[in-house]
Length: 308
Image 1 (spheres, rainbow, N blue to C red):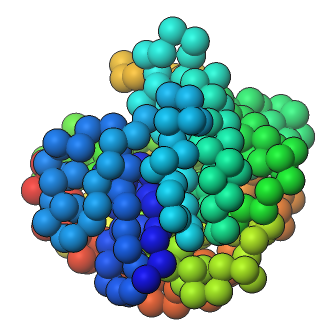
Image 2: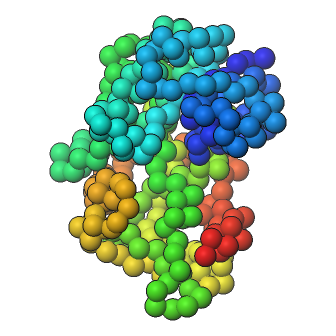
């Protein structure tokens, strides 16, 4: 039975990978988390998953034992959990990634997978810098310099972000609104529920994907269309309100400025003259049973509406 080590096991990405590997069967899963006593970690134990404590901020030498006998490693770094680090989230995330890569190389793991992102600076023709894109792109550059083959995957904005984006309308009781600085521009969306299905498919023949980068895209759309889809599914009015990037930057929540940069970059990265940089088909080819936005919203309708 192949051993798969999953970092970020209690997060959306790692959690999705574990769910799909459990469903597939045939894997011994070792889940890595900073808090082994958390409710999410203990729920994994109940499913037969081995839980181990690990922190990517620690030296690679502390991570190597976790990788013992691993055939596959799924690695992800979390910029948003590092916002309070004194050296800054970007440099902290880069260090996390380098520690992970160094440990994987030292342990000689045959099939490592890293969940990264492309450089927004490069894809916006050096116009817009997005910290959490550049940090992950920096880690990918480090992987390339190491000369050790990885599979790289790129998920984009999650369907699941609608749990945060969807808010009660301040103007029309009983209706909803999405307030984001995207105008009519298109966006790439990833169904995180299906993300692990793509990873599980890759693991059926991982040697075919080593050294490759795979975009995980389930929808290419704009937020006016997103609002229309949700309105139809909910039977309630959902309106998209576009605000300026600078107005969004002033919103009072941690990371608002980073996200403002991201949305500004998206408007260039995903426009008609740049979209050819992305493969919009491969994720659906790898996991054909993926959700559409409408089917995902239908499945999670009660959760989305209960939030409000």
